[in-house]
Length: 141
Ligand SMILES: [Zn+2]
Image (cartoon, rainbow, N blue to C red; front, side):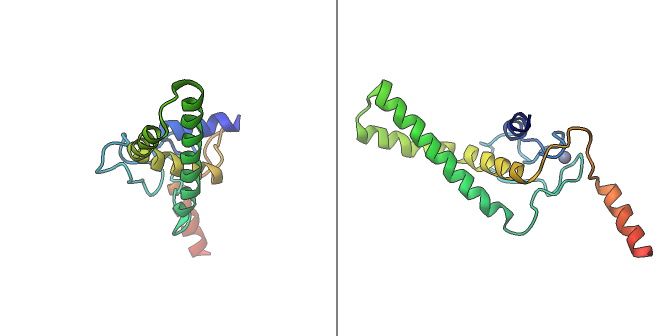
Protein backbone atom coordinates (compact mmCIF):
# COMPACT_ATOMS: atom_id res chain seq x y z
CA UNK A 1 0.00 0.00 0.00
CA UNK A 2 1.35 3.36 -1.05
CA UNK A 3 -0.03 5.21 1.97
CA UNK A 4 1.53 2.68 4.35
CA UNK A 5 4.98 3.10 2.79
CA UNK A 6 4.64 6.91 2.91
CA UNK A 7 3.72 6.76 6.61
CA UNK A 8 6.70 4.50 7.28
CA UNK A 9 9.11 6.88 5.55
CA UNK A 10 7.66 10.03 7.15
CA UNK A 11 7.39 8.71 10.70
CA UNK A 12 10.79 6.97 10.73
CA UNK A 13 12.84 9.60 8.88
CA UNK A 14 13.68 7.09 6.15
CA UNK A 15 14.58 7.52 2.49
CA UNK A 16 11.37 7.34 0.41
CA UNK A 17 13.15 5.30 -2.25
CA UNK A 18 14.64 2.43 -0.21
CA UNK A 19 13.39 2.87 3.40
CA UNK A 20 16.95 2.20 4.64
CA UNK A 21 18.94 5.45 4.79
CA UNK A 22 17.99 8.41 7.01
CA UNK A 23 16.82 11.68 5.46
CA UNK A 24 17.68 14.00 8.36
CA UNK A 25 21.12 13.80 9.96
CA UNK A 26 19.86 14.37 13.52
CA UNK A 27 17.70 11.69 15.08
CA UNK A 28 15.65 14.15 17.16
CA UNK A 29 13.59 17.14 16.05
CA UNK A 30 14.65 18.87 19.29
CA UNK A 31 18.39 18.64 18.73
CA UNK A 32 18.71 22.25 17.61
CA UNK A 33 22.14 21.82 16.02
CA UNK A 34 21.02 19.19 13.52
CA UNK A 35 17.21 19.11 13.39
CA UNK A 36 17.11 20.96 10.04
CA UNK A 37 20.12 19.27 8.39
CA UNK A 38 19.43 16.75 5.66
CA UNK A 39 21.74 14.30 3.99
CA UNK A 40 22.30 15.38 0.40
CA UNK A 41 21.74 11.84 -0.85
CA UNK A 42 20.61 8.59 0.74
CA UNK A 43 23.50 6.70 2.33
CA UNK A 44 22.00 3.40 1.22
CA UNK A 45 20.74 3.89 -2.35
CA UNK A 46 22.18 7.27 -3.37
CA UNK A 47 18.77 8.84 -3.95
CA UNK A 48 19.10 12.64 -4.16
CA UNK A 49 16.68 14.28 -1.71
CA UNK A 50 16.74 17.86 -3.01
CA UNK A 51 15.80 17.32 -6.63
CA UNK A 52 16.49 20.91 -7.68
CA UNK A 53 17.41 24.21 -6.00
CA UNK A 54 14.43 25.46 -4.01
CA UNK A 55 12.77 22.04 -4.09
CA UNK A 56 11.83 22.28 -0.42
CA UNK A 57 9.93 25.57 -0.81
CA UNK A 58 7.00 23.30 -1.66
CA UNK A 59 7.24 21.77 1.81
CA UNK A 60 5.93 25.09 3.17
CA UNK A 61 2.51 24.25 1.73
CA UNK A 62 2.62 20.91 3.53
CA UNK A 63 3.69 22.67 6.71
CA UNK A 64 0.76 25.08 6.35
CA UNK A 65 -1.63 22.14 5.86
CA UNK A 66 -0.27 20.43 8.99
CA UNK A 67 -0.76 23.64 11.01
CA UNK A 68 -4.35 23.99 9.75
CA UNK A 69 -5.00 20.34 10.65
CA UNK A 70 -3.58 20.95 14.15
CA UNK A 71 -5.83 24.01 14.55
CA UNK A 72 -8.95 22.14 13.37
CA UNK A 73 -8.27 19.15 15.67
CA UNK A 74 -7.48 21.20 18.80
CA UNK A 75 -10.31 23.68 18.15
CA UNK A 76 -12.80 20.82 17.71
CA UNK A 77 -11.56 19.07 20.85
CA UNK A 78 -11.89 22.31 22.78
CA UNK A 79 -15.42 22.88 21.51
CA UNK A 80 -16.53 19.32 22.21
CA UNK A 81 -14.66 18.34 25.37
CA UNK A 82 -12.47 20.91 27.12
CA UNK A 83 -14.43 24.19 26.72
CA UNK A 84 -11.41 26.36 27.49
CA UNK A 85 -11.98 30.12 27.22
CA UNK A 86 -11.08 31.47 23.74
CA UNK A 87 -8.19 33.65 24.92
CA UNK A 88 -6.56 30.75 26.79
CA UNK A 89 -7.14 28.51 23.81
CA UNK A 90 -5.41 31.09 21.59
CA UNK A 91 -2.42 31.20 23.96
CA UNK A 92 -2.30 27.38 23.95
CA UNK A 93 -2.48 27.35 20.13
CA UNK A 94 0.38 29.83 19.66
CA UNK A 95 2.62 28.08 22.21
CA UNK A 96 1.86 24.60 20.82
CA UNK A 97 2.62 25.73 17.26
CA UNK A 98 5.98 27.17 18.37
CA UNK A 99 6.84 24.03 20.36
CA UNK A 100 5.83 21.75 17.46
CA UNK A 101 7.70 23.80 14.83
CA UNK A 102 10.81 21.55 14.58
CA UNK A 103 8.57 18.48 14.23
CA UNK A 104 6.37 20.17 11.62
CA UNK A 105 9.45 21.31 9.71
CA UNK A 106 10.81 17.78 9.45
CA UNK A 107 7.49 16.07 8.81
CA UNK A 108 6.55 18.51 6.05
CA UNK A 109 9.84 17.94 4.22
CA UNK A 110 9.50 14.18 4.56
CA UNK A 111 5.91 14.30 3.25
CA UNK A 112 7.02 16.57 0.40
CA UNK A 113 9.82 14.27 -0.81
CA UNK A 114 7.42 11.33 -0.57
CA UNK A 115 5.13 13.09 -3.07
CA UNK A 116 7.85 12.79 -5.70
CA UNK A 117 9.50 9.46 -4.94
CA UNK A 118 7.85 6.08 -4.97
CA UNK A 119 9.11 3.31 -2.70
CA UNK A 120 11.01 0.66 -4.69
CA UNK A 121 9.35 -2.36 -3.12
CA UNK A 122 11.24 -4.93 -5.16
CA UNK A 123 14.72 -3.54 -4.74
CA UNK A 124 16.34 -0.24 -5.43
CA UNK A 125 17.18 0.79 -8.98
CA UNK A 126 19.35 3.81 -8.23
CA UNK A 127 22.84 3.44 -6.84
CA UNK A 128 25.66 6.02 -6.77
CA UNK A 129 28.27 3.49 -7.97
CA UNK A 130 26.13 2.36 -10.88
CA UNK A 131 25.49 5.99 -11.78
CA UNK A 132 29.19 6.86 -12.01
CA UNK A 133 29.88 3.69 -14.00
CA UNK A 134 27.19 4.66 -16.46
CA UNK A 135 28.48 8.20 -16.87
CA UNK A 136 32.01 6.84 -17.37
CA UNK A 137 30.69 4.61 -20.13
CA UNK A 138 28.91 7.53 -21.73
CA UNK A 139 32.08 9.62 -21.67
CA UNK A 140 34.05 6.81 -23.38
CA UNK A 141 31.44 6.58 -26.12
ZN1 LIG B 1 17.60 5.28 -0.06
